[in-house]
Image 1 (cartoon, helix red, strand yellow):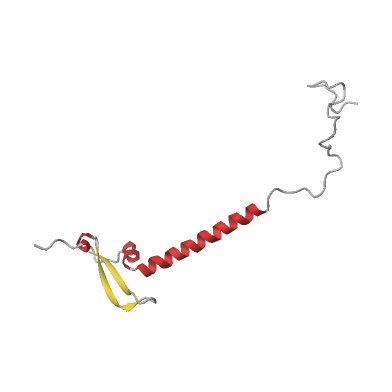
Image 2 (spheres, helix red, strand yellow; image 1 turned 90 degrees about the vertical axis):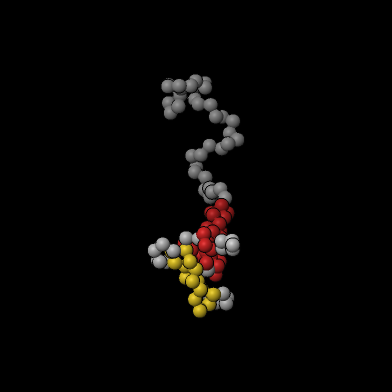
Length: 112
């Protein structure tokens, strides 16, 4: 008795065509065993040329996304080109509000 072939357990039959891909491999046409329709998922499995081209396309898209993310990060922190005249110097020692440093309402903020 002959052991079953691995392709017998597949849900599709791969029919080889006479035409070839650019790299010389045969084009296969997979059909579902139960309906006879094209099995589109099996097209990738039975035609490695297509799977390789699709992987190259995904690789190119992911590379473009990676480059875009890197370019966004290159800008770094935003540097202020002009300091407003009303800005307080960080080294200024007089940082307590007027009125002896009281806090809360009526602490002297905005009061003269």
